[in-house]
Image (cartoon, rainbow, N blue to C red):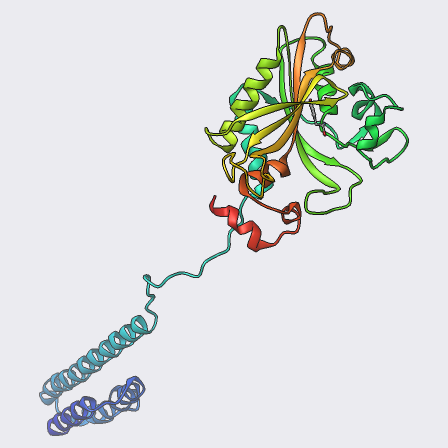
Amino acid sequence: MKERLEALRAEALQELQGVAGPQELGELRVKYLGKKGALTEILRGMGALSAEERPVIGEVANSVRGAIEAVIEEKTAEYRRAETEERLRSETIDVTLPGSGLPTGAVHPLNKVAQEIEDIFIGMGYTIAEGPEVETDYYNFEALNLPKNHPARDMQDSFYITDEILMRTQTSPVQIRAMKAMNGQSPLKIICPGKVYRRDDDDATHSFQFNQVEGLVIGKGIRMSDLKGTLLQFVQEMFGKQARIRLRPSFFPFTEPSAEVDVTCAQCGGSGCRMCKGTGWLEILGCGMVHPKVLEAGGYDPEEVTGFAFGMGIERIALLKYGIDDIRHFYTNDLRFLSQFARM
Ligand code: DAH
């Protein structure tokens, strides 16, 4: 019996040496150590042994079992290690590969310019005021010294909703609302950005809907030189320290005197080019000293306080700042146009 056990050990170990894979290893375990396996088979004969022989054979049998189990365990560990290694190899992530880029949005150039304008005036102590886009005839025209039969109303063909209600044609009505909210108190220093609407046919320089920023300062002893200094400060922060302004006499019903403001052409620096039509100057806004009738409509005594006001088109400022030749680029959402401003 001892010889049979030793022969079994030799046979098993040899066969295990040549095992081909985990599946065959499982089969060999059953073949040698299983309930119906070879070792059990031999041990069935133990009953026929004498009392002295039994422990001796028992010891041999245990040693054979131990040897076979040891090899099987070793092989199992080996297969597991190989499997883990293979997994690690096949699942490697190359963290140095470039990632796939996610497209990110950017602030729209008009919002960017609006924010810049706001920042500049906030830096000068202004606060931001807002008013409705659907406005009454009173705020949009009448309180701004444009009575019903005033010829200046022809300049701004409007979208009327009823006889008395319209889409505001300018941000100037916010002047009246802001003044009234002060109940005669001064000083008042505001800018009002927002959308305005006009019955224009869209082309390179016109749009039925565009954006303006209104400015208004009311206080004791406010003079035209304050207006001029404020606008020069604004223009130099917006277009650069080299920028200059000039005021040309003009007319607006809500200011007296009124002026139109030109800035030196950013393209040629004032020497004259196609953009400024050879003049070296570009018009950027309208302004003036607040008309006494407008002060009164806002609840102020024109004998007590004075004020200045100005209004500019945000699109126009953006066109000039970035050298854009068609206002429609701002509204048509062409990413080739818009993405250029992401890096600015
Ligand atoms: N509201 C004027 C327009 O839309 C612009 C303007 C001119 C505003 C002079 C003002 C101003 O406040 O003083 O054309």
